[in-house]
Amino acid sequence: MAERVRVKTMSPPGHVRAPHYLRGKTGEIERPLGAYKNPEQLAYGLDAAPKELFRVRFTMAEIWGDRAERAEDTLDAEIYAHWLERL
Amino acid sequence: MPHDHPGHDHDHGLSPSGHPFRADNDAPLTYWQRMEIAARELLIEKGIVTPAEVAAQIDAMDARSPANGAAVVARAWCDPAFKARLLSNGSDACREMGFDIGALHLVVVENTEDVHNLIVCTLCSCYPRTLLGLPPDWYKTRAYRSRAVIEPRKVLREFGVDVPDSMTIRVHDSTADMRYLVLPARPAGTDGMDETALAGLVTRDSMIGMGLPRQP
Image 1 (cartoon, each protein chain N blue to C red):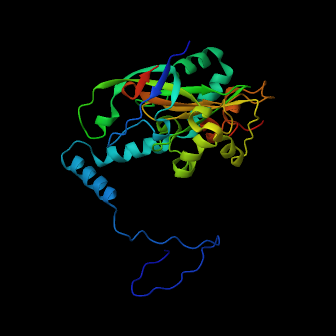
Image 2: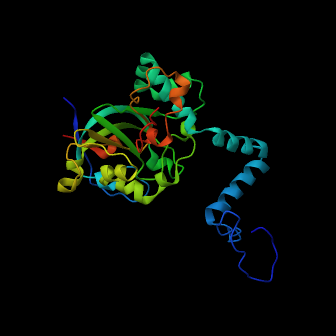
Image 3: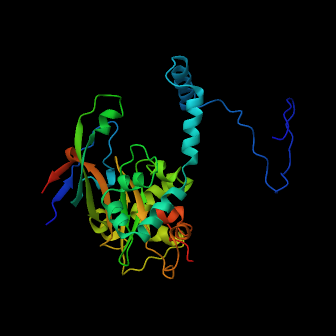
C-alpha cells in the first residue's frame, strides 16, 4: 500500500522547489530518493542541511480536476520531506 | 555584419542563403554577463583556474551529445541485465559504459506498451546535460514547461506523437536533484540489428519522451 502524502500549502518567500501547482495536492510516494542538501538554503550560499527527498506521484485528475486530459495520467515530482504531510 | 564601418546605417541586404545578416552584438552586457566575466577573471587572477581549464571544460560540455544517451538506450535494448541495472541506478549504469557524467543522479523511466513517459522541468530547465549535452531550446520555453504538465497529450500531438487513450502518460517534473532519461520502447522489426545500428535509431527527443525512435 503506497504511502499517501499532501504537499503543504505554505508560501514562504524566496527560492523553493515545490511547484505552486502541486501545493495542497495529494499523491503517493513513488520512491524515496535519500537525503540531499536543501536547495532553499543552497540558493543563498548558506550551509544547507540534508533533507529527505521523495518522488511523489499525483493523478492528473487530482491536479487539474475536470480539466485533466485523461484523469488516470500521472505526474511525478521530487518534493522535500519538509513540504509533505503524511495522511 | 560582413564588414564593419561607422557613420552610416544602410540595409546590408540578404545573405546568399536568402536570410538577413545577423546584427553584431553591440548591445551592452547584461548584469549576469558582467557577473560571469568578473567571477571568471577573479578565479583566473587568483590562480584557482587557468583560461585553458575553462576552455577545456567548455569543450568537454560541447562534446557531450545525445549520442551518449543513444548508446545507453541501445545497450539496454540488447542486454536485459544492463537494462535492469539502468532502471535501478541510472547513473551507475552510465558510468559503467565509460561516460563521465559528473555528479548526475539519473532516474531512467521505461516506455512500454501501456505507458509513455515524458520529462519536463517546470521550475527552470533541468536536463541530464552531462549525459545528453545541452537541452533543445523548446525544452527551456515557458510554453513547454507549462503545457507539458497541463496538456501533455496535446503537446505530444504537436510533436507528431499520438498517444492512444488506452495508454497512460506519466509526466516527470524534474523539480530537484534528479535528472531523467526516457528509455523508449525498442521499435518493431529491429531484431537483427546490432547495438551500434540500434543507437542510430534513438533520437534526442525520444529520450525526453517528446518523440519516438526512428523506424529501421
